[in-house]
Length: 250
Ligand code: IPE
Ligand code: IPE
Ligand code: MG
Image 1 (cartoon, rainbow, N blue to C red):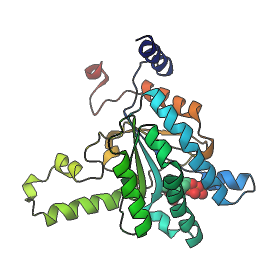
Image 2 (image 1 turned 135 degrees about the horizontal axis):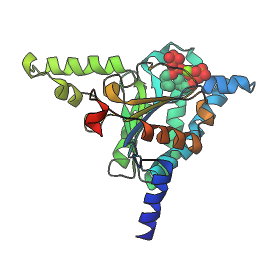
Image 3 (image 1 turned 180 degrees about the vertical axis):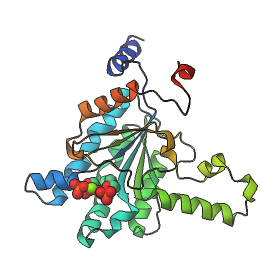
Image 4 (image 1 turned 90 degrees about the horizontal axis):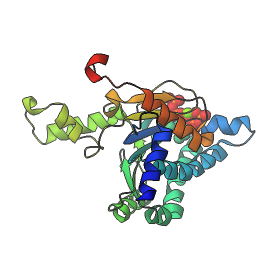
């Protein structure tokens, strides 16, 4: 009981109005520049960026975030040099190999969003196994957006709707949402982008229609617990009007 009260107070301290985003999505950008500034290879930036996830997962749980969606590899990232693409694919495999047991023990439910096709069959199998193993965990849902593109997701949804012969007048926003990768999850409340870029880069373009956006110039490997608290606190100060007036929401 005392612990629960303390936890509540801590949350309020973080968030002036106590509002915690249920679903936070992160565009983890700036690994390459982080490495370059240190005279290191890009691979080192990706390695540090991956390491960073550990503390962010824990901090997300502490704050009370329920769902974390992380952008790890976009459908556009296939255009990078083959060596870098291979490295990024390998990183996901290594994370599953090395971290799955710990993540499972820590109550993380791992999910994948994006196209599995295009990813090698061994990695596909590992992704499926990781999802299967952690499916009943509820401490934190982590969606890994890998080979993910928002437009690709919408095209995929429309293809399935057409294939299933759903009549045009039954197609509405709720139906489309149901055909998205995140069908059973609430839309992201807060979308964070690191590294100073102010663009969406094809991330959650359907689900993010009313998300609060937050950008920081910090490169992803340096985005620590304090940075996450800052983003969440900023979210707490935002007014989500959904088209209404201030008077209507007060
Ligand atoms: C983000 O870092 C990781 C991925 C896109 C996979 P970048 O690799 O994009 O880093 P910058 O933008 O070149 O600094
Ligand atoms: C977005 O970052 C994709 C991921 C973080 C996985 P990029 O670095 O690929 O985005 P652009 O190309 O600069 O927009
Ligand atoms: Mg980038």
